[in-house]
Length: 539
Image (cartoon, helix red, strand yellow):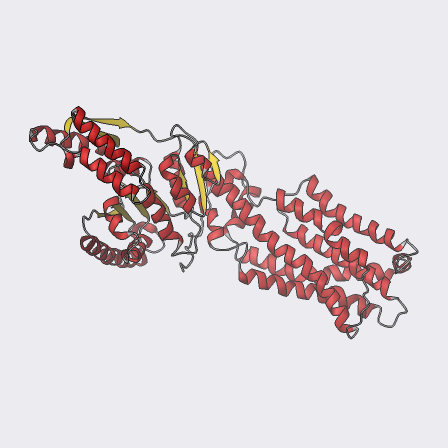
């Protein structure tokens, strides 16, 4: 604003206005400088014709509009300056503190002045007095390059010193130096879409907080793209105004706040909410539940389908690739429709490893997703090994038990069907955390429904295996095989699960035990020491 004022004005007025603006912005107020210029009729007509021509141009419209605006926005007379208090919404400081405790990297992109942004950063608990601030305010590309290189060098030195102090003082976090990067929009002009992006990302990766001030809407999208293109982490952008639309659309997940600045951000977002603080339960509660359910359901669905297919595979392999099958076509079709479908849906929708209160009280529990505790390549292959063992137990125990008998193929096929359905439902029941009547009805109702379906299928004379289940159920060997199969199949998984949870419990397991055995009448939550939230290796 001061660069386009009339140079013939009294300098004392300009200096006084600048002092007022800095004072207002240091208090966290949003500042506005008001100026005017008197135009004659001829000047206005000339400018208006130029503006009409620029606004209707098909090529270079933005550059022409900037040129027309620059022709009239000069030699302004300062009328004064204002400072407006922009109050934070209820719960914003607590929400940002919870997100940072959960291991979420919080970057703030704002159009406010640097002083205003820093003041708001302190009031919102984004910045703390113990943080070392790195300020980058450059007016040229070379100056910006030198500032980034110097900042990277300083951050490495501080990281080394804080690491040595951390080692000396033990496990306490007193020796860890937190860095806060504060960069303005002018510097970002020279950084974005240039070779300096890598240096900015390297520096920002070493900082706990990044605060970008005086940022244009396209620069906000550029910052999100900077992180999105250089890391495998998910990016989430949240905003409440039209200037946040490009940022929201660029991020993996966009959240719009419906407020006084219109609904443009809401219309462009994936999720809409009324206040910023609602982001905490969205991520720490529903995000954690969704990750836990999805991670387990992926492993379980691979398991329940693979164990059934492997039984068919062992039969084909054992019978020299014959075209016959021991399990009827109806049972093969109903396995994923009736026998095991409902428990999967019910558990995937209703099961919760921790309560809402616990997840909000201990944001560190969100780190389970960062550490890939519910789903990873290692867990997948361990599940497949367990699936292989269970399929071997289901197939070979009845085979050896009836080796020298005159039992037909349909009878042992019914035994395999019942065994695998009971097994996968018990497997699921071992991992259910919160039982209710719906879960009991789904699990045990599916087992009962399987028995009924097998009996009905074998009672139809026109189908293969007529009356087979009734013949095999009359013998005690059938019931003994069912019992031995279940015990032999689940014993390795039960033993490993017990040893792991007893000798090396994770944070979720500890918090779950605290929920169950803690005193519910205590005024303060049970003190639980959490593991540090480990950042995944960036790629």
